[in-house]
Image (cartoon, rainbow, N blue to C red):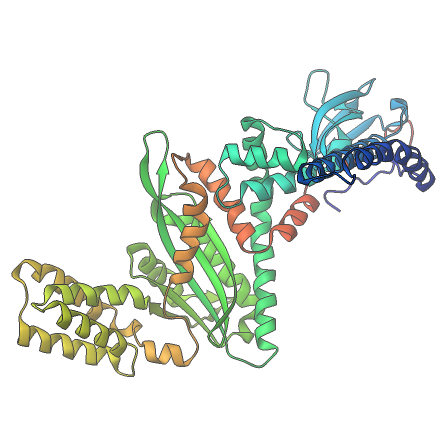
Length: 485
């Protein structure tokens, strides 16, 4: 299996009795510190400061014990004699030869501060690349164990996590402070290994929600949305449009969950369109028979409309035409009514009363026709501000052009969402709350990496995606020489 060492001589099992003996010996040492702390700080005249100091001492002691135990276990996975290790190994199709002595990798970050790892290394040729098979076994990358990478990645993807804040919180959690370069290297590594596993895990998450909804025999709707959000790009602070998409599962009119996609600014948002289409096709193949309907809810923006016209309107999966219902976001349609109300020669109370009435009217059966007749009547009765004629005509063209996507009464009756609030919220959660903090500017690659990790975190698939990424890492294989075969 990928990610696993296939030869037992590369690593060896640690006997249970050895672990027990080590723990028994160390427990005596480690118990002294908390015992002393209890005697020092827990007494009849103690106060809050004493209780706080006691907890801090116990925490530090527990962390140090865990760090020491991890270090001892990891260092015990290889034979102490380097000669007992295989002479040759293969990794990524390349052959490596064992070096004569073990070397130390100091300052390996774990969830319990840093450890020193003593391991055998292998070199490609006399001056080529060097690898440490034990580090491949343990999943160590960028000087961090798999457990530390998991912790760091979640922090990097968290809301409000600037570089400084991330480093501070990682130091508080692990007891070890890392630098900006290491943080960035870990971000790049995590994004590269997790993105290939994202779609499979998102499909699995959508399957769970669909199965849960269908279990009760209720209507199941898959809602697809996409939108753009401006993002400051380095070095000059120009703003470009990043892209975000969502797939949400609805049971009747109740949303069970949402998975997220996001990409850095790109012309025509081609990467997001490709990822969104691929994810949609995958879930249709898997659970298409359990879906009562698929809807595409967006504003009528240029790229959103182009994706509908070029892809979704005539989407085929395995030769079968897939019916997708487009819905123009009700709240964007309502903004056009506001523009029209502002253009009419109305008093403030007349404007408020009419606008309230037509917004409700748009949600009723035959609402679009009734609204348009009301607009015509108001124009004739009250007239139009000459300075606002162009705005009024543009708003009316919008309503006429997308008339067939505004049957909101029927959409609501089927339990379909009529607003794109989910994807607009996604723009805020993925981009604004993480990438648009004070003074932030991004290169395209860096923004894409953070958006990938944040999308995975918000889709509730971090654990599964990270595990799949670890399993998929290429294995180190032992090569048997002809003389010993």
